[in-house]
Length: 289
Image 1 (cartoon, rainbow, N blue to C red):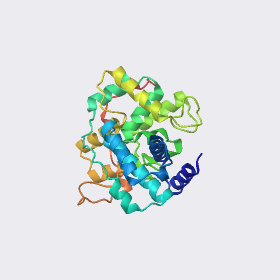
Image 2 (tube, helix red, strand yellow):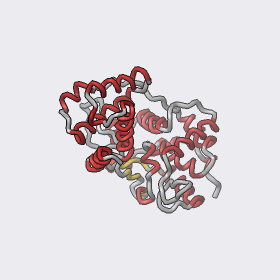
Image 3 (cartoon, helix red, strand yellow):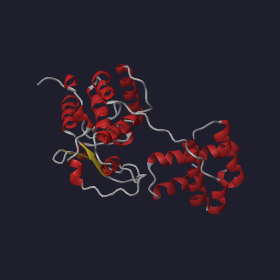
Image 4 (cartoon, rainbow, N blue to C red):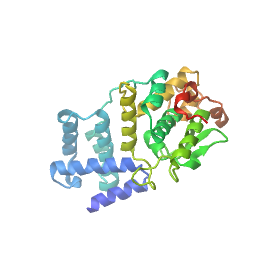
C-alpha cells in the first residue's frame, strides 16, 4: 500500500465516511493515477479536469458517477495533498444531474411481487421489509432482531444515510411475516444473514438478485433496482394521505423541497401510521395455522 493511499484511507475513516463512500473514493483516485501513470499528487488541475472530461465525454459515464469522482478528488487534494482548494474548485465543476422521476409499482403489482414472485420465506420477508418499511437496500441488509420494536410497532434504522438513526414502520402484517420467517429459517444475529457466512449480513448484490428473480417470476416489468420498492412505499403512503413531514421522517431525508412545511413530527405520530403492507391481501402467502 502506498503512503498516499494509506493517508487517504486514514482521512476517510477519521471523517466518518461510510464504507461504500470510502471504497468509491479510493477507486476514483486509483484510476486517476492509473490513467496518467503518475502519482496523483503530481497531477495538475488541468490533468484532473481532462480526466473528468474523458469520463463524461468519451466513456459516457452518468452524471452521478462523474459527480462522485469530483467529490473524491476534492477530498483527496484538500485533505491528503493539501492543495489550494479554491483553484481546485475552479478546475472541477460539478456536472448537472438529469432529473428523472422514479418509477413506482402499483398496489396490485406489489401484491403480485410478494405473492407470486417471492417464493422462498427469506426472500419474501426481505422484500416485504424493504417495501413495508421504506428501507434503503443497505439498511435492510443490516437489520438485527433488536432493531424491531414490537411494542411501538417501529423499526430502528441504525446509522442510515448520513450516519443518522431513525425510526420507520413495523406494521402488524410485516411483524407477522417476520415472525413466521424466523420460525422457518431461524436466523441468529442478522435478520437477513449471508447465505455463505451467517455471521455476516446479506450482501447488497445478493439482495438485488433476489429482487430481480422475484420480478421475473411475477412477470412484472423492471422499474429500476430494488430502490423502486422504497419509492413505491413513499408514493403509496402519500396517496393514502400521510403528511409529507411524517414521510420525511420515515424515509430519513434531510431536506424537503417545500421549506414552509413543519419539520417536527412526534415519534408517537409514527406509531399511528398504517403501513402499505396492510393494504394488501397476502393471505395466500401465509401458511394456515
